[in-house]
Image 1 (spheres, rainbow, N blue to C red):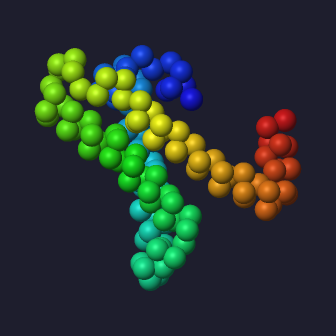
Image 2: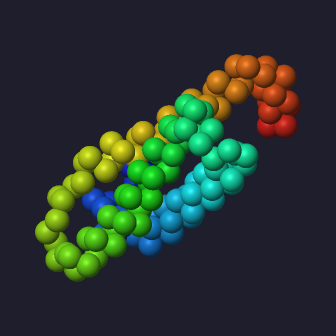
Length: 124
C-alpha cells in the first residue's frame, strides 16, 4: 500500500530509486519462491492440478511482466520521453491482485488457530 499511496511515479521506470529497488527485490523473492515450489513437485504436471500453484503462477508471471518485461520495453521504445501510458492505471489494478496472496495466509490461520496464538504471543 505504501507504493500506491506514496510513490509519485506513474510507472516503475519513472519512480524514485527506493521504489524501483523494492519492486525488484519483491519480484526476485516471489520468482524464487515459485521456482522452489515448482521444483518440489515430483511430477511437474501435478502443478497444473494444484489450484493455488496455478493462481500463484499467474500472479508471479504478471509481476515479472510488469516489473521486468514492460519496464524494458518502455525503456527501449520510449527512452526518457514523457509519453507512454499516462498514469498506467491498469498496472495499479494488477498490483492489487497481488494482495490476494494474503488470502492464503488468512486461510492458513483459520485452519491452524494454534499458529495464530503463537504469533500473537511472539508479538506481545
